[in-house]
Length: 84
Image 1 (tube, rainbow, N blue to C red):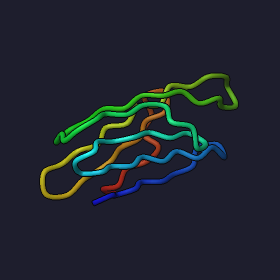
Image 2: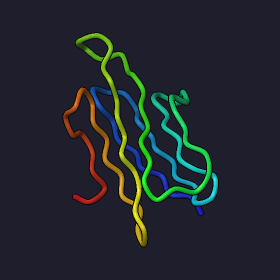
Image 3: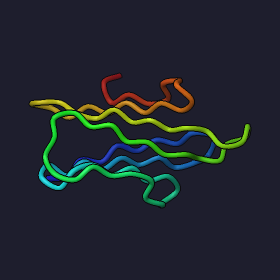
């Protein structure tokens, strides 16, 4: 089972994939930035993107028990939440 979360930030594509038994992956503009392997109920992924103000840190919190939720932060500011 695969669940995908997608958003854009300053024209850049951020995609988080969750595969139930295979783990989570973070892609920025199609490039794999981070991944967690295996089954977990809460994962954290990190990456970087080149924004208008130089390099910016991307942090993803993903997890859940019955439903998977995802939050994406850029430089510690929330830019996407699947629970909106």
